Amino acid sequence: MQPFMRPEVEKIVSYKVKNPLHDGWQPEHQIVNNDVFVRINKHDTDFFKFCTGEHIRWSKKRDPQCHHFEFFETMMKLRNSESQKAFQRAIQEVRDAADQDMDMPRKRQKMRRSKMSDVGIAGEVVDVVLEFSGRQQSSQMLFGCRGAPLFVRADPDSMGFIQHAMHANFIANVPRPAVRRTDEPDDDDEDNHDADGEAEDNADE
Image (cartoon, rainbow, N blue to C red):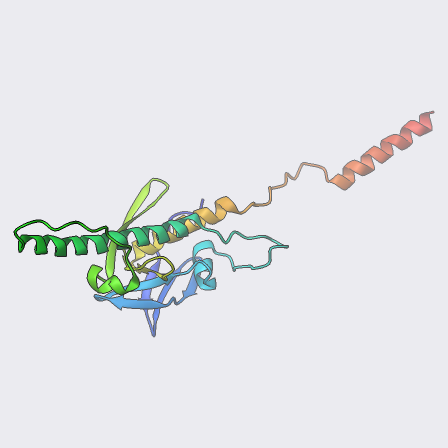
């Protein structure tokens, strides 16, 4: 498995994230509370190379490539879950404050699912803990719900953790050609050897 790398995040004209695998990823980004959040898109060709070290190939007939990353799907679900929790906490705080002003408790209503328009209630940033292969990494994401783009804080530790997990998924799901032993005979040599043996048997008869 490829070793863990700590990428660099540098600001030129736009923010650029690079590591030994790729130095040309300039992702779409947003700045919130002086922190940079970059968009994570598994179909971004530069992000794909940043994670895997390979150019993305869309052809399925020749040299098939894994474009499904379990860790990416996990990050999307984590963002949605933590955003929902942040929304619920904010609503609960409002309800608790309202209950204090009333003589009798109000009837509780079921909490609805959050929407992107609820960012003003829940806040723009949610705290998350990334997990992969027994390791954890504290990070932050922008508030979002199902279908919204995924933005993660572009600190080196978070970017390195994501790259490592995505690369591990890539290696695990892509069949690699087996290394051929140099002392093994080729198929053609075996066929020729069998043919020579048959000729010698016929000559003896």
